[in-house]
Length: 313
Image: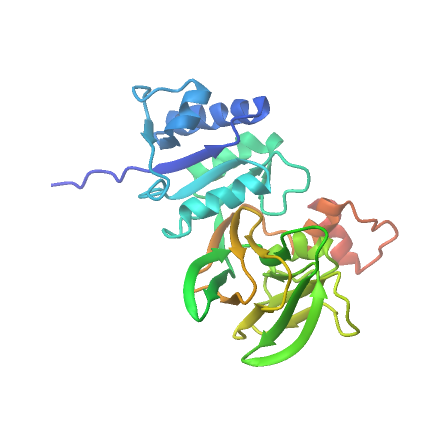
């Protein structure tokens, strides 16, 4: 007896508040189902797209925690914010995420909005690779009791809650105190997040292949307040000093928040599991930086072989 062919499924997520995103999402849904791939959609987004449960090749779900179950990948149409939302939905299942950029910079995205046909072909032919990226495990303690446990792909930032007040914190690395600051906050970032908030705050850009964590004080009133890079095995702790006037707030990826009263302790370490991103191209990260930031490279000579690769590629 022959085995039944395995059903292929792709979870499609879109920023349906934008006309362009809806058009691109519909094009992908049509193309995937035409090739016999089942498209799973969040019910609310399907309604925005005018797609119903009875449409051929379509599955609808209202469960965010189980949205990517049995899906070979998650296709996201939008900017980095949409991709971070997709990571939240797929983090537990480790479903690879493929981003189609509709934002401005879109460092997490792999394809641009003009690449619909080639991206569709790559999905159908399984002509892609996956890349694991380091994540952060973030825990908040109050009076020694764990009150919140979450994760971050880009960064976890401890920030002041009120503009008019500074945050008094002490930074600890691997169980030893390093420095005390009156500051606007502290950013703890991954290499993936080094081009996001970390970059805006003056932190270093870290190539994705480097396993490390970045620490950047925000407007710290201290002589020693430089960005730092620590080992992936390190444990970073930020304690909000009890004498701090007012509260702080923890932001994870700019999406999830936790209120921090004076005395709160935030521990950041390497996440137990990575996030898995889909890669369609093998272009070096250097080329991605040049393209995304529009960096000037005119006049570069390099080796003749390198120049030919750039011209031909």
